[in-house]
Figure 1 (cartoon, rainbow, N blue to C red):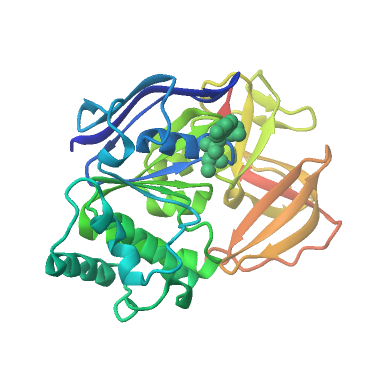
Figure 2 (cartoon, rainbow, N blue to C red):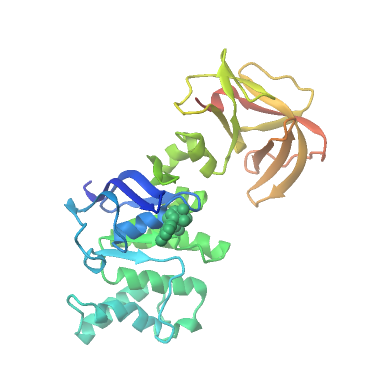
Length: 357
Ligand code: ADP
Ligand code: MG
């Protein structure tokens, strides 16, 4: 696979505050890359630099191996889909999709038949057949998002940057559009760099995930590797499925002051020690049940549960006030009857924990 986009040591500051520093990664031709990070981690700034809406303070952006520093935004061959997908309110679906082709500076499409066939191919691809003559105020939010996507794809960009493209949709539609986006991308064979603040979206969509952590790259890996082996406590935190403890390491144990857990294996290098156990790898037992060999755990007070459809989330409070979340997948285990304010033993295999330090 060849790299269509290569980011080298990119930096950008506003005043004295660095929004991005030392960001490097490459995106292969025909790849779907998710860019995951919490709010303020620099995701939008990064896309704006790649698109050419702003200039970096440091580093280079290579497109097909060529530095594009001096190429203006509209000549980069890069498409951009914004979160709020502002469409032209007075134009039809058809005219919104065709607008860029007709009005661009370089090689506008003037032949009516050629224009029509390109627009209609896009209308079909994004599933809007029959709606092309509607005004954009006469279609649903999900359909407007498809128009925004079609409007970008119709100019045949080599790479499409999507900034939280599903953020404005309701949860149902968001899930459906995930599948649609993947289908559309693979049908066109175009490269997508998809920014999201949602870990489930990043894991579901990307061939690979780039995790942004405070303006730097925290991890670049396949969804499977990021999910199972986050390289730092911060990456684990952004995945929203780990219980994290900070403390000290010594004598073969990790201790957070209130609890200690036996260590197995060598900690992943990190500035400060931390211990992470995935929410779905914890089991809940009666408070007096002893820990078996190879197990770690502690007692905690049951507070509440939340039903998510496929699982129950149980919330516990440890003696030091730390809130611990346990996920019970209903496909693995029937829901448990837990008494609020009662004490339980939370147990996991020491081998399943990730230790940093
Ligand atoms: P997100 O990951 O939520 O998209 P952004 O990339 O928008 O985050 O922002 C990253 C950081 O850069 C934030 O601290 C933000 O306040 C700052 N920032 C972004 N754009 C500007 C700007 N034009 N002027 C000053 N600060 C900015
Ligand atoms: Mg943003």
